[in-house]
Each structure stands twice: as structure tokens, then as C-alpha cells.
Image (cartoon, rainbow, N blue to C red; front, side):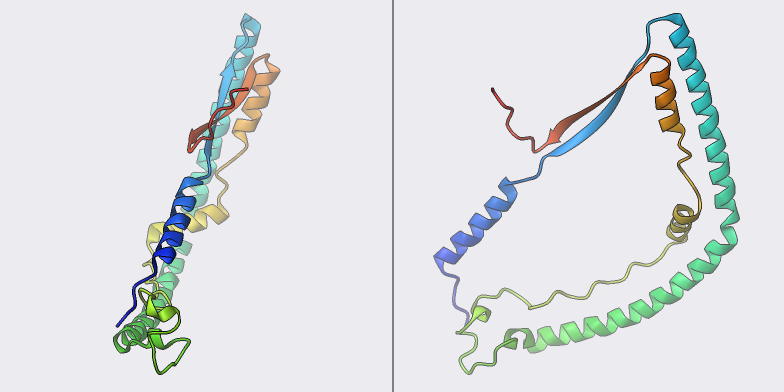
Length: 193
């Protein structure tokens, strides 16, 4: 027989939930806007910046594709190793899950940490809604694409610095690069001062 939660405890719980949901952190988004120069020389300069950026990005993509192609043999080896590790993790998960289910069936979680003769009338166990610890987490099965993505991230360079160079070139031609940050979600009230 379980005793119901007292009204004050329920109110405290409801207050904590309301406080947690009412104090959401604002989320901001940053955007970049380019203002081109008005004179013909500045616009011709920006056209050269665009051409340089396009060539840089094409070269960068070609180097990345070549690097990714070189990883093919290693991807297969690493994928095989990941499958073996997954098999071991799955066996450990099955053991942990059986132990967890046995604990639930035997109701041992209610006997922790106390062993009182009038259990469950004393202590937090009188109202505790479930097990004292969460169920085990099932391991995720590896994929060949995931292994490849991990190797590419560590071995191949995806950013060749084309955009910072373009930004510097754009500003050097007389253009402006304007960064704006604005609130998009859970925004604080606007100041009326």
C-alpha cells in the first residue's frame, strides 16, 4: 500500500516545473549582410573576389573528394571493427537488461537504500514512482556511412578558408560586411526606455 503524495509536495513539484518552463533561455540568430560599393571600380573588384572565392571552393572540394576516396580501404576495416564492438556491447546490454528486468520483477529497487520492517510506509519509497535507476541504454548499431563521416571529419579538411579571404577582399574593395544578431525564440521583452 502506497501513501499518496501530500498536497504541498505536489504544489512544490508543479512550481518547479512551471519555473523551469517559464525561464527558457533566449535563442539568437546571427546573419551577415553584404553592402556592395557603388562605384564601377569597386564592383569590378568584387567580381574578382567572387571569381577567387569560386576557384578556392572548387579546389577545396576537389581536395576533399580525393581525400575521401583515399579512405575507402580504411573505412571497411574500421566498419568491421565497429561491428565487432557493437556485438560485444549488445551482449553486455542484454545482460544488463535481464538484470534490470529481474530487479523490477523482484521489486528490489524499493528496498534500496532502506530495509525497514514497515516499508514502504517510511522514507521516500512510499511515493517513489518507479525504479531507483534508469534502464540500460541500448547501443546504436554502427553504419558504414557513420564510420566514413567520422574518418572524413578527422582526416579531410572541409574548410579551406575561402570565406574569410572573400570577406577581407570584399571589404578591401570598398564594400561593407554587416553582422546582425537578433532574437528568434523565447525573446526577452523589449526595453521601452
